Image (cartoon, rainbow, N blue to C red; front, side, top):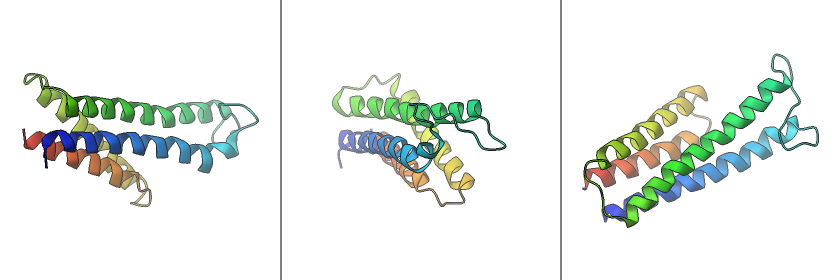
Length: 132
């Protein structure tokens, strides 16, 4: 497989994962914590409304950061590479996805499938980086 194709696959997987993460989080978690507003505010002990708001923001921040990494990967799929920056960029993406995968795996005891998508994104990126 061509290195650019693997970057494109990894980036596309990152976009899809972020979409699923945000949409399913809204459907499965945050819709129950809303009082007719965009940002959920209904707390339940030990969490207060302000705790729920920051959890909501952090939940979607993870998707936004994933989309940023995905954008870099997709750009790399279609661009000549700057040899001096490429290893740093790729290692940042690989380790962020590996770390996220491990956190989700351990934190949910493997029950949340997000760890698989994060691991796959890291692996495709690593294979593409190794092929260069």
